[in-house]
Length: 418
Image (cartoon, rainbow, N blue to C red; front, side, top):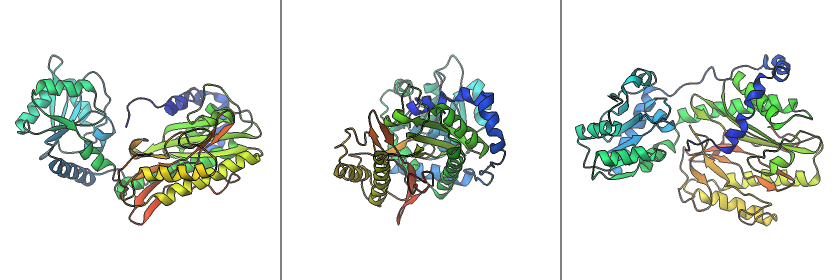
């Protein structure tokens, strides 16, 4: 859960100016007129679910001896309180106490705006421009008689919040809030999974619209712009639409070089959107025109790698064991070993939910056991520097019976979308 822009987000952003190019979208408009919103039936997270989240968090606080947790703006604040706010030098924070209602601390002049998205019963305490906001946080903790208990800090909070609270409450023990925040967010409820499924349905529908419209001479940015346009018309909010062409596909997040679609060139797309705050993440690779024997072999091996990962995903298994299984298979096929190239240079997958990348990852050494409700990407790509790369990515969620796909992996290089 990082606040910094990822490389693929920056690459996708480069496509945005293309959305106003009259030639590109005017040509697409007749086709887009037949594309319809898929999200009309989306059910947002409601008050009862948010109340259960707070109850779960408070139970985990008790179990871990934590008196309260502090959260800065971002997905975790939205998750627990509904408040959608940006980070700045002026602190806005949510404090979840081990008992009772949460508190939102925010600048005085921002209170009306903050209340617009507040979705749970909560106290709001404000601070003036000449006040210390962490002093206001400390005051809330004193009033709730929590000064003698450890305070958990959500893992993405900035140092000035951590340091400021420590200064405002000398002697307070500040600890990681991961046992609470991760303990809640890593296990998705049926309502969350339904929204993630809808986001995936939007992304797959956009792929089906875009794929037949990819033509020789197009750049990755132009393909990404088409994907964004289709995603919006289908009711999703695009998060990233990366399209890597030719040699650029050999580098997982692409290259600064501009490559154009041509016969025999790989097109690797990695795209996702948000529906009601929950994300999708799907990658597809194909060859424009005629695939070579090598391209076909690599595509088939990656498709098999996805199934190896899927087969290793079992309740109670360490998350890292999925990555181990894939690397053993790839090594048996002559790739690697380990993270060496040609081979799989990145983890097999990552957690996903409100953020595109969430804890925990399917990566070597990750000991967290798989549990029902956990959601992950499955993307064991293979990359051949100087040539091309193939990545197939489909997300899944864990059930008692094993993993369930959000999107069905493609059948063959001739039918790459599915």
